[in-house]
Image (tube, rainbow over all chains, first blue to last red; front, side, top):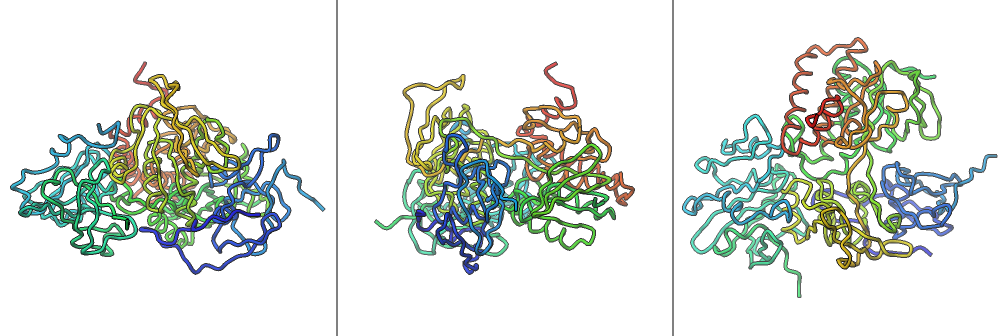
Amino acid sequence: MVERVKCVRIKNHPILKFNQDRKKLYFTFNGEKVYGYEGDTIASALHALGVKKLSESIRLKRPRGFYCAIGNCASCNMIVDGVPNVRTCITLLKEGVDVRTQTDKGVLDVK
Amino acid sequence: MLYKEGVPTQDQVLSKFPSIDVLIKPKAIIECYENIPCNPCSTSCPFGAITINENINNIPVVDFDKCTGCGICAYSCPGLAITVSRVKESKALFKIPYEFMPSPIEGEIWYAVNRYGEVIGDAKIIKVDNRPSQDKTLLVHVEVDKSLLYDFITIRRKTNG
Amino acid sequence: MLNRELVIIGGGPAGLCAALNAAKSGQSSLIIERSPMLGGQLIKQTHMFFGSEKQYAKSRGFEIAEKLIEEVRKSPLIEVWVNTTALGLYEDKVLTVLKEEEYLKLKADAYIIATGASEKSLAFENNDLPGVYGAGAVQTLMNVYGVKPGHKIIMVGSGNIGLIVSYQLLQAGVKVIAVVEASSKIGGYKVHAAKLRRYGIPIYINTTIKKAIGKDFVEKVETIKLDDNFEFIPGTEQVYDVDAVCVAVGLSPLSQLLTMVGCEMKYVSELGGVVPVLSDKNETSIPGIYACGDVCAIEEASSAIVEGYLTGLVASKFLGKVHPEYDKLIDQYKQELTNLRSGPFGKKLRDGFLKLKGESNAL
């Protein structure tokens, strides 16, 4: 069950304008139907939903979230539409995408 | 101390103020204590009252004869280090830069706050300037008690008790 | 194999300005950028910039980015590939990239590497817990995606980035409980520190994080005081309730491509890490390969912009396209860089550049 945290999206900002009319994009996270908005990355959409744990470390299974947010550190790697090791902090959210927590090195199913 | 706490000493603050008889008209108080490469205050002053010269690391110097207290420098300073100050009878009037929400509204009473973030009294909001040229930095006209002249630096909203 | 004359790796301020001045010299270029958008770190900066008018002082970072990106988009000489990661730069001047899902090989006559820098991390217990973020990540979440990184945050590091991001957190409606600084003085501009103090954020020097506490994400943090040798002082621990820790302990140049292609590199801690040895015109030791921006030395956007402009001209000249005012502009840019680096805050940089050239005041 995904934890919900209220009011994590910024509505009023003294300097920036955040578009409040963005299109809602539904996607699945570990099988559950959730949503984000057009313009979100997968990681930012999950963060807004209160999901901070994005993957697990390979050996000790420690929870991992994102750290650098610009695609350098690989802390945010998740399995997206069956493809592992996707840097979700720089991957834009698309409608219907299937996102899963990655808990191992990641195996690509090559058909 | 400035480099340990981020707060200037009383002497440092006083060194930026002109004598009190000059403050019958509004004047810019530039609390810039370090040499950093920066000159928007000087280039935005329409009266040539702020001098930095060629080396933009120089600390700005205000010519209080030329300064009209217009406040353009206050919302142009990237460090938000400038306020405009004036003394009128028993009150001190300030124009301060402000970049938070919710915005103050004319007539409201907010807390007057000192450089340590401590509440030192009340501040009456006289006017709020928000012209496009200010690029979203509000210029808030505030009235406080004259005794707070050298301590007041910003406002904080009173939350409903 | 795709061929290009000039490829610029990195679409931040340095890369964008290099492309613009190359275009003004009549030289076409291809900008490669791994993010979905151009602008680098500028797009997250909501504060007004320092420097002088020539470096867009007083404008907010994201406004400068918008201006530069608009000019780049309008130029018929500048091609842009976003969502494209440079994978390797080989000694035969072949660049391999991942463009969306496609693996491509490029060969260019000249390359400008403007890959910027990345966050350093800090060693403390449980520093891998979700909720421990680099300062850049906090800025990205807040200012680019409009998502609060947390509700109550502690900031580690009192350099300019730590101080500025703390202020931006306040603007986003996040409570910053404190800024902790391991050394005995505040590292960044005091005007930034003064802002935080007046808005009620304490700054604790000689203090660092001992551990983050939480099961699946950060719930608390324990700080501890340090003595003059940066050793923990037992008994000075304090625990705070937070849901995020922001680590702002410095940046390190992303210079791997330069190392890979065989440029002469040097480790200079004053400049941020492993940096290329450069001429005063940003030429590396390999003809046709240039570098500009934070990848050469950790500075501010104002320097990255000027270096970008300068390098764009120099690379174009190498390719045979000389700007009509080449000499005048090169001198102007060099002078601007000297001015930006001349104050007390520029001392570390100046020392670093001397070390890079092989001279040292200490010898």
